[in-house]
Length: 174
Image (cartoon, rainbow, N blue to C red):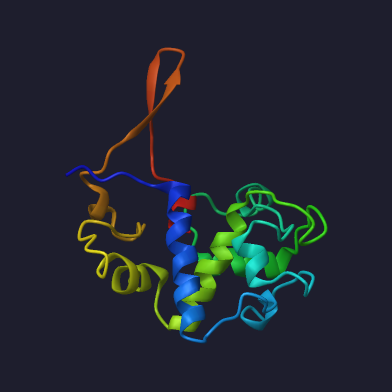
């Protein structure tokens, strides 16, 4: 009965959401990202497939925007997109030239799901992924509803004098 945060294991659900939209004819894997995010500040050769395969070359928002974001407020997918458009952090390598695991790719994909479906990624996942699969206790974390994780497993990290409880943080809303 204990819920726990899947973190990056949840990327598979984002990928399936994109594939569902592809099956509906709403998105093509070879489309440039700027087709869905007009203010996307990077090379037009970066495609949906680039994001899915972690080959976009865009920097990881967790690190490149660390000094800019307000860590007291939970971030959203839309805020990640807006911050990239505003600050245009430098690209890490030529797009589609290599693999580099990166959270930004999937934050952008989740945002695209929101735009194309007209609903939050949380609602989309509940309606189109979890409910059809019979996953009645699964959900996407919502920082505005901390009661959802009241019975969740708590992570701990070792410290000099025992262990420290790892709280949910500002990045958990993306």
